[in-house]
Image (cartoon, rainbow, N blue to C red; front, side, top):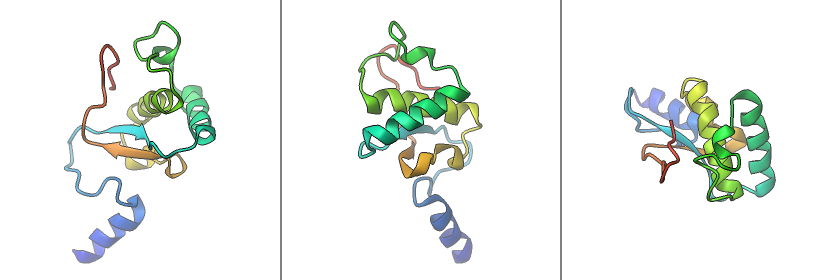
Length: 109
């Protein structure tokens, strides 16, 4: 059993260890990620899924910051792709969280 646990720690770098199967999770941008990396993540995620919710007038437009916009887009991609830990890697600039990051009229799915 210890062998499997250490393998999980290596594969997921601690970001998903301790999650219970079936537990709802979300993918967000690491606050420490650079604006350049966040822009790359935003471009990639929005090339795969619709990012209309973060466009001007959308429910997730505000706050209009790189980390907020990227987090919404990254989570859309993560949810669309099946919520697998590897869908929230983004070159180690993302985190899987267990607390719903939704705010105001912006719902994270």
